[in-house]
Image 1 (cartoon, rainbow, N blue to C red):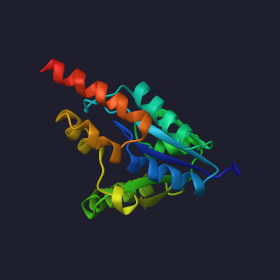
Image 2: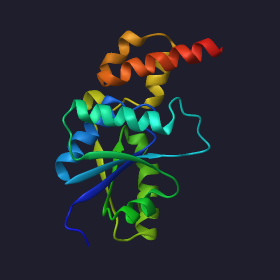
Image 3: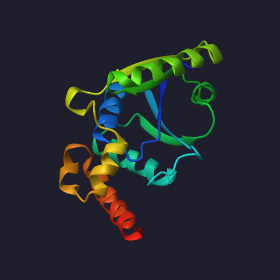
Image 4: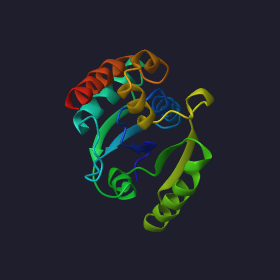
Length: 171
């Protein structure tokens, strides 16, 4: 077993928000290495490709000087992916209390599948706890991009604006 404390923070990150980044910053202080893992889910229709999402995460982490954060993609069960990496912790960002039942169910299933992998729940800071990628897409789709500054890292805003324009042009 490696002595490096490694954790995995999984999600779709479509796109990464300041709420995600708040969790990433805080988790990166707790672990030697934090892998932000972009899940590939064929049932979802993301705005950004997995490669684009990874690049936005890399740029956002670099802007904040987070040198122990890396990103990759994965398919399949998160807990198995974490185990394959040698991670003993999965970090989950929890927003409003409505997230708790689903997160607890997932945590209990993961514990059953891989008893040595723990789940650590972190709640984004108060002003960011309500922010979701879905909210971002809704605001951007309504051409309210000026309002996105409160929710997105600087390097992500332009990418979201371009995607929103592409989506509006397709209608």
